[in-house]
Every structure is written in structure tokens, then in C-alpha cells.
Image (cartoon, rainbow, N blue to C red; front, side):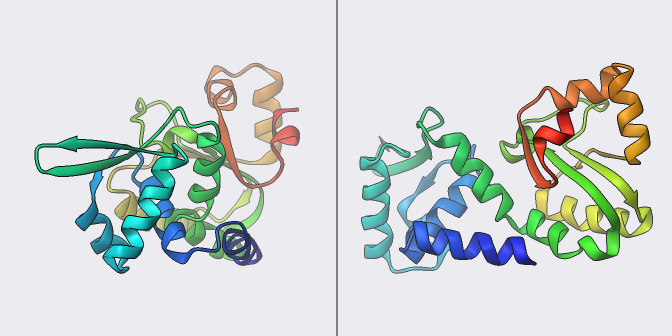
Length: 200
């Protein structure tokens, strides 16, 4: 819970506009979608003038791209924006799925690491033998299974994940296990633990 509170406080401090925070959360939680003004207003539940003003600011900053199609203006994330990856990590950690995982950590056992592929955040499909989530530690499997079922219903598609004890994880790293190194070489978001130690 401390992480969630810290993230909320940080976002309120760095981005004092509540409407802007809600717009950014919407775009980064649906990074491959485009939105017209009325849809943004509906999804963030704020006044149209406030939403339009914040969209204009984000376009001016080049975080959003604006494109006119027939009689509608559409907005999309600019994935070439200088701080795109940094914002993606922040708003992924603040997403309903990761907040749910973090809030339920005490039920999951003694977790050393939870690492998430940025392909999960970017909604990029993966192969059956690949994973979005890596859990390392002494994990209560039935609790995790229930939690991940709920996460899949929020995500809208299966979420491949794997669980290892710390000993197994270290052994497989040392022996250059292709499954684990294929995941470790990808860009990651750490929910629990430190990436430098994860990679040692």
C-alpha cells in the first residue's frame, strides 16, 4: 500500500492538474488507442473545457499527437516523446492491475522480485512460451492464481507469468537458461525488488 500512496502523492506533486493526470492515465493505460474529445471527456469524467485545455497543453508539449479526420480530431500518444518510457513506467505502476497486485502482496508470501515486461504495458502480444510477469520468492500459488485471474479480466486477455523460488532463479540464470534470459534482456518494470540485483 505504501507504494500506491507514494505514487499518488508523487503524481499529485509533479502533475498538480487532476484532469491532466486522469488524461495521462487513460492514454498510457490504452497506449495503442486513439481518442476524440468527447470520448476523453466521457472516460475521465471531467468538464469538456478543462479536458480540451489539457489536451492542448499535452499536444503543445508533444506528448500527444493531434490528427484531424473528417469532422473529428483524434489524439494519440507520441511514442517518440523524449520521456515516453518514463511516463509509461509511472502510469503502469499506477494502473489498476499493478495496484491490485501490490495491495495483495501480504497474501502472496515472501516475494523477492516482481518484474513486468514493458510489452505488457504497451499491450504487445507475446508467444505462448513467453511471459509478461516474473515472480521470484516463496509464493502462495493458489492466492496468486486467483489474483492473476482477476488481472486477466481487467487486461482483457491472458497474462502469461511464471513463478520461481530464489534458488531456482539463481540456478537458471547461472546456467544461461534461455527462457529466463529471454525475459531478463527485455526492458522491465520492477514492482518489487531492484533491477540491478535481479540481473546480477
